[in-house]
Length: 288
Figure: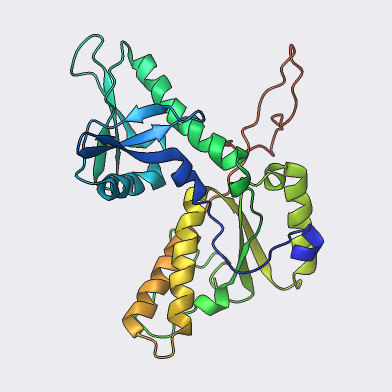
C-alpha cells in the first residue's frame, strides 16, 4: 500500500510531530527564575506566563503538561475580575495553570491573543517541513483480543434493549488504519479518496477497514499507547498487569479516534473560492 501511495518510509515509527512543541515553547530567564513563553514565527513572545519556575526544566515540564491541550479553546479561560482594561486569560490543562502577563482592554482583544497561539500551532504543524512526514499505523483487531478474564474488551454495539445490532464481534476481520491529517498530500481530499479507495482494493474482501485521519494530539496519544502495547507484547517475560494496562490504554485511544476534515466554505461570489465547497450530504465540520 505504501508503494502504491508513494510513501517512501513505511517503517514502524512515531507519526506525531514533536517539532511543534520545540518551535512553540521556550523557557525565558527572569533574573534567577524562568517563565514559560510561546513564540511567534519571528521569535517574539506572544504569551508569557505570570508564574515563575526555579529552573528552565521545571518551566518546560509545565509547558509539556499544557501542550496536548494547547490547541483546544476549552483550555483557555477569561478572567475579567480586574475590571475595565484589566482582562486577563489563563491556560488550564492537566492540573497546570499559566496566566498571561498582559492585560487586555476588552474580551475580544484577549480572545484574539488566544487565537494567535492556536494559529501559531497550526502554522508550525501545517507549514514546517519537519512535520511533513507521511506514514500510517495498521492495527489488526484480532491482536487486541483478551487473553484473560481481566482484560479490557472492545466496545460491542447493542440496542437500548440489550440486543445485538450486527456489530457484536469487534475483533474478527477488522483493522484500523490511522494516518496523520496534516502532511501536505494528506490534506488533499482527492488524495484521501485515492488512498482510501486503493487501500480497500488491496485489503482482502472479507476484512473491514476503519480509516482515520487524526490530529497531532490524537496521534501522539496513539503513538504512546501503541508503543507501550508492542513492548509489553514483545517482552521476553511478560508482566500480566503491565500487558493488561497497555491493552486497555490502546483500546481506549483507538475507540475515540476521530477523523479531521478541512473546514468547508460556502461559495464566495466575490472571490469565487470553491476549494472545499459545502456539498449536501457529504460535508463534515472541519478544523483546518
